[in-house]
Length: 246
Image (cartoon, rainbow, N blue to C red; front, side, top):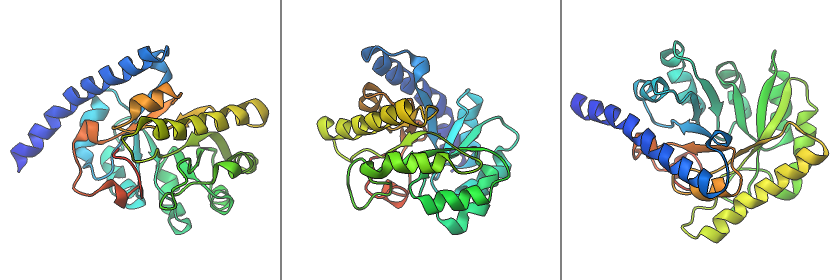
């Protein structure tokens, strides 16, 4: 078992190199610079020691979907520089546990949650508005029709700054409907930036299977896990209902 874990750890730098080639090619194909797209490592189910391998390679953005994983890995990662994002569905009764340990919450999808987060903060926090661009009932996220209003309300709350938007694309191998989800988020972002929340620049969208499509549609951050850390013992539906593999 120890040998298998060691082999997996040594594979991480190679997988990161291969992922870099994919991202660079997608950026070039879209007429964008590589520096325009941040890579966030989706570290759900990944042990802290394996996350450290990726952090040591210079990739310092990580994202967790479940509060218990944020808490359980925090001490083991505390001594290595990184920025931690919470990218899963946040329940109000878990807010106090997660807020001291994360730098960004990507999954604000309702005003009552944002108000509760705001009240528990003693510092400024960047948040993203999660939008259900696919219209699937199994997914969390605000309806696109309500996203602009929610962004404006959240941005007006004390200690919160709306830094952009996040979505989970349609779980499909059909490029057209998947790209339509990402296009919808970009259009929303552009409208908000031009009208009421100029700092809401981030578009967090795209995962291992569809990152090229997301980059073509303007993603400024992609969330990738399995392409770096390998397949997981638990399906993505456990973390992101209805989602594509991360």
